[in-house]
Image (cartoon, rainbow, N blue to C red; front, side, top):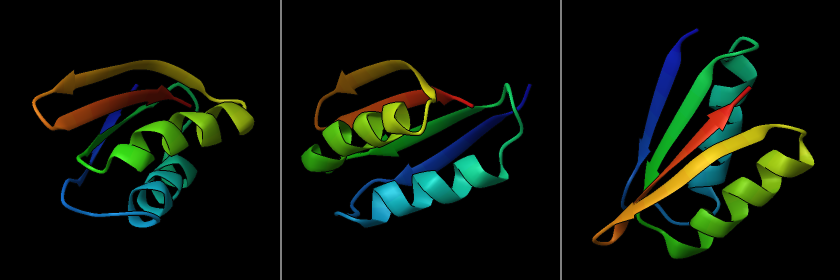
Length: 73
């Protein structure tokens, strides 16, 4: 299993979702993609998009104005 971390802090829609999709396409089955961001709308959009793609969202952490979403492919 590999962990892939994408840092999209400071980016606004649709960049975080686009970068997340790119990383998920490259990831192998069982890998974890971790998305770090600051844009509030992306924090809602990314998990919804992942669920619609049949992927598992392992967790969403928030600290100060940043969030981290863990996704399992």
